[in-house]
Amino acid sequence: MTVTIYHNPACGTSRNTLAMIRQSGEEPEVIEYLKTPPSRARLVELKAALGISPRELLREKGTPYAELGLADPKWSDDELIDFMLAHPILIQRPIVVTGKGVRLCRPSELVLDLLDKPVESFVKEDGEAVTRAKG
Image (cartoon, rainbow, N blue to C red; front, top):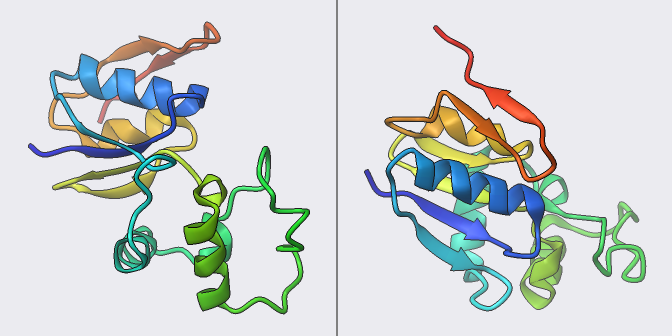
């Protein structure tokens, strides 16, 4: 199985997601999207595969969201994508792509349904234990 993660190593949720992928036996393609942002076409593809609007893909915390006035409904979808391309930190993370689908893995355990051999249990960096639901 091919697994790709759009990753920010400074993000605990992203690190936990990456660890769960690796513990499942997969070595994903890791795209540090702050260093290598997706193209416009790829960002639009990811958004469509996630089934969300550009506004839903925006990250507010720790970003220039407020300074740029992005809460204002005047911005079109194309303009919001332009902002994400100009400021990749605005893109929610981590986004994981596998043959089973595409998912914004917030919380990190959402990645488990995308993996062939997901871990049964995992302890996150903050000590929270995750146990995979059976069935």
